Image 1 (cartoon, rainbow, N blue to C red):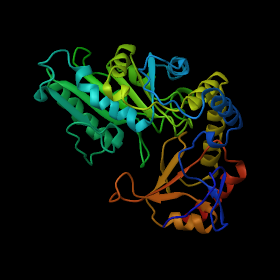
Image 2 (image 1 turned 90 degrees about the vertical axis):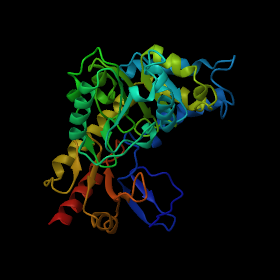
Image 3 (image 1 turned 90 degrees about the horizontal axis):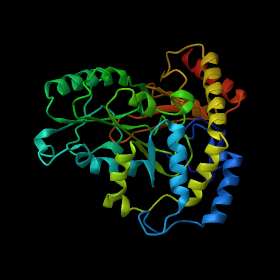
Length: 364
């Protein structure tokens, strides 16, 4: 069933028919959709840069705001460099279109029989590439099998593709399992951190630094439109890798993200706004965890904004009690529907108390 609205949800959402609900859905984890300073920075950006940039970023004329923000964000995320593109989906697909030429050291390396892809269960379509094949293994079981296959095939190029955090079913992925792989092998990790950047890792810095400690070749892609509220995507990697991607026709031929948003992104980073929102979000998550006396209802991760439930009756029960969660099949229409709740930096204690009260009553 569809519930239409003409308003952007914040703490609450008002439907077209006037019904009002507490909003515990979506992916605006840091509450940037209603961040006042963000709105002001965006006004400044539109005043300075107009509504869009109708040009390739590889054109003779360059808007410096892109490179300035890329340098700033790379420092924020603990990565050597970053590259901004129009969306998280395109960030992943751009990397997958070029990964074989990046990873191959010679023409012989690029022979199809010498390249092995290892797709983690539940990987987002953004990182579906050549020879994609889904599987229903538990992530840790898949990781163990992948490690074995890599060890048994030392002369191959291995491209390991995984989400940083399980989605829509929330799960923590322990990449340290790969830490003992030999550095001498040609192994590449392509990790989608769309549901982690801004909200997981050291003060919300995401997966790049922990992944880089594996001492393998690491490329992180992400949508910035979730936790960080910027309609754009980003690629985090070594500078030489991003230089290769920048020369790709897939980069040159794609429209860039709107420069006004990139200006606002830069200003938010400089103002340390994301850190403030992260701390508020974490406080809310921990407050709700303390208020919810039972843990049997949800699947989740400590200090993570999203919780899921396999109880198909929960969504309707929450809705009846004035709370809007989400429940739909994703990413395929044939997938099992997921009842999903998200706690954001916008929520107040009374919202969290009400959510806990309703969930406790549902279980009793």
